[in-house]
Length: 109
Length: 215
Image (cartoon, rainbow over all chains, first blue to last red; front, top):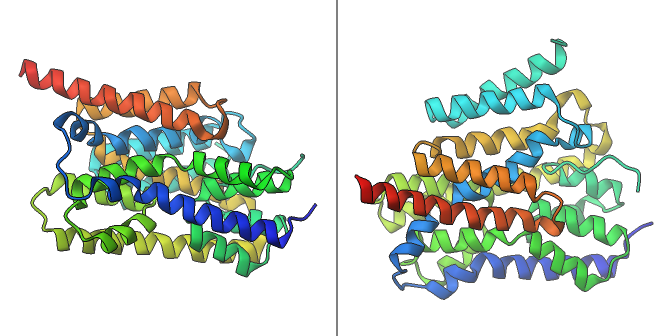
């Protein structure tokens, strides 16, 4: 079944404005005010609190296998994490993960 | 519904499957620039859900953006209103990850250098996302499976966050978030993610505070 053009553009407009509002929310409200120390302390952990939450289900329940655990993908993720924490280098970690994934997938270990 | 589950990083492919033309797919990506929300919205529209529900669910999936907004506000709050409006439009997981780590590691950066860094990082990622949507819509299902593009995004995300996992509180936060989000994975509309994140960041801050008290 196809989606009507009117519905589609209504949703695109609504989502575009709504997403911008979410993204602007605190940047707009807080403005140039100083935040309390405890809030600032919490916000230092935003990145490490959100990204692992996005990543974990994708690693343990990959979409490509319809959610079944997949050893090549799991090991590639593990190698990327290890090299990233150890070397602190983004591109090196991506390369290490990519090499692991392709060797595992294409050489049938 | 019997179809392969959509790949997070190839919105264009899904858009093509649902009969969107390239122009609409790219416009969607340019206006919303949020993969998960776009997928959720398209799938719901396909299932004939009411328009308002589609928009609300799409936004629920995007709630973490408000958290990114608050965090960027601590770094960029001195910027003028219109600059902050553009900063907001361009908040993405990738650019937030790069910018937040950079600003935390170099707290003495001037505002203009911070903004230059932020907009370079974010425009690079946004261009890749929009161009990727176009290519995906064009190539569609002709993208070969052996490329395993489905896993490009998890690897990139791990590499982006890993350098930040270098202190005990950061590791505790990361581990808690990953575990909770797995446990809460059945929660609808990506709400598990935001709950996991809020619990994890409060815990991280608490661990940091206790470590400071004992040292």
